[in-house]
Image (tube, rainbow, N blue to C red; front, side):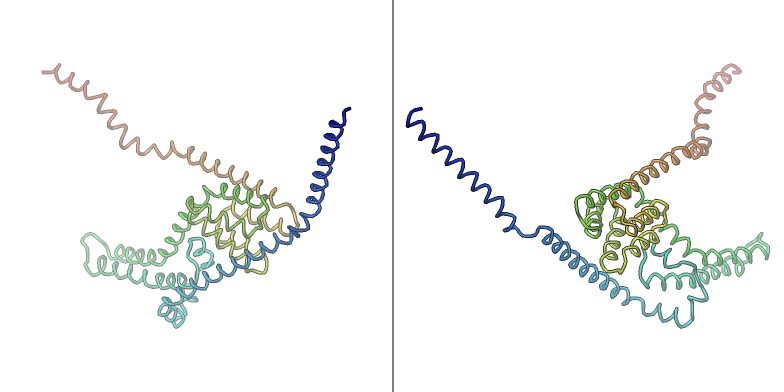
Length: 320
């Protein structure tokens, strides 16, 4: 080997040794400069949780202030005449929460409506069926119609709340399995439960405002309640559906026994998708029975006209 080649190999070896040395120093020193990643991440999560908790509490306080401004007269009237005991309704708060009506104002409005609606119905019945003395109506019939209007006014607020809760639940359940899938992705990506619920609430706002509202409220409760179990139970109480109740129960068990949350959410999402498919199959199976009356009223008469009209015309021409 010539001296020039030997010098070239020696220079290349020295450069390689220098590069390896610098790489070793970089591998050793860089983790020290970055610090504790886990500690930084936990600090960022705690900061985000605290800021989210403060914002949620501020929103709830503002809503409570707005509710308290308009309930003075109704509250005084209900408290003065003890309408809560006189017109007692079982599980009223839960039913109103299922309809999306939270706070004290809907409760007082419900009792006021339950008091006024029967009086209005009885007054209408008294005027139209008793005082006007309609011909062909017996006295007992007029009294029965008046009592029927009075009873209808009494049960009308409950019917309205039940229908509103049903419509609200109908808008939540079709997109609930998709929300569980998003929640699963957020949890498995490393987010905390509070941040995952908040993120899903933001993403589901376009699909279902009601579901986004429920997840936002659950995020707030997870932030400031003493136990996560209470937040999950409140979620099941506000949405009276077997699928949501099963999810809440599974989340409570995962919190209590320390089971992986990802596996629980994956199973619950699959079960809720099956419930959605079963609901669609149920509607499809009920479709023939629902089409029977429209077919009898609209399709068959037209079909008979189309089939029998030419025959009737020919028979008429034959007898001319």
